[in-house]
Image (cartoon, rainbow, N blue to C red; front, side, top):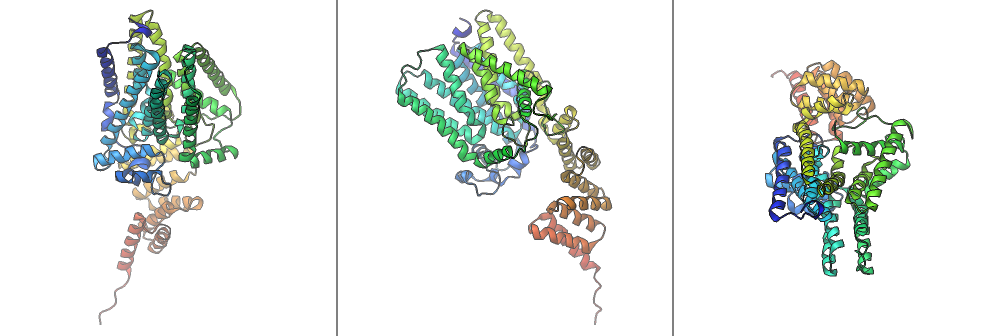
Length: 546
């Protein structure tokens, strides 16, 4: 039997699962040897919460704690990795990412089997999801753990919901309903984007109704009210967990503090994500200004083109959904899951490729449904097309994955695609400085300063390089420039070191005193003040012996 009627023997299913695990290992296995990069410092290595003992798990749901507790389920997995490794061992965290991705891939296969039947469609759905280059950032970037967990628990929740819709008895429906709600809560604790789950649930219910118009005839009023209440609980949980972040976004929206005029910005951002799903020719880790062209008007030529593309996508999804095709669910799933990150509520990260992880489940379902239906007519052709598609996507991911090996390779690769990305240039300079490549770092800071003149972070980095290279006069001048716009601890500390390097001990003592007044335990301030006092002590004349 072939196509949608093909059930696949137990051995065939086992073989399909093994090939999926092997694909993940082939494409992403080398990431276990990679370093922590980019925001891994903020979220993991420099975050005291990640090293909490597991008995402090309840504290993740309290607001007044030190460190980042945002997205508690994600933070719990970091705590678990730290406990296993006995510290911040990068390979343990990367291996954990790999295992979470494998779990998500196998869950996608299970959902696709439930929706599509057969073997080729579900296998291709999971394989495309497993190796799609747009999802690689979530897998090889430890900070991308949020999206891995979101994708896993959201897919598992919707799988339970589908089983609920197909369940023959009230008892089976209740069990699946509770499982769907529990998994939805885990998805919400991983990332707030899980707020789209009620909408995705409606899409699944609609395709079930279109395929089997009598499917809901046995559902009681109480069961319908229970499912509606479950959706309300999901939405309420988002408000409870993420109220501060939502409030900031709403305030920014009301104050018209978006990055660029709307609706042009959202049209361009959403279309960018979807185009990259169709073919990720170029990928980059930075989409801040200078790395992505922002619209200057509410509607312009590029945004109109993007809006037309989105309209075609939606129309195609609705048409397929009305025909009872899972591909329609997939296309609409991809877009719905992108809406929370489509700049409808302003936030600083214009585009982040790891946001595509959950939307890719829907896109992969659309691909799997299409090829699965082809298999009903041309079985060999369908398998051949599936293998070629997975091979092409795997090859693209194999080229992309090594970029994330360390901060230098990451930002160098980003700058090859977006040479005017100021943040990437700054981050490359910081990475070069950490590796002792001082001249290269100085040049990178100078280039970044040309892109963002007067930026205090870039100036601080440049000043630190001048100081380490021995040009104390130039470093002091830069420190004064920063102090004029942002007189913070870092600027005062740099100023103190430049003065110390020139032998201006009284001025250096004054600068370090200011540092210690603001931050009494600042390591560089304490060390600098100690050196100043030692040199002042040597400079004082000794009393003559009586």
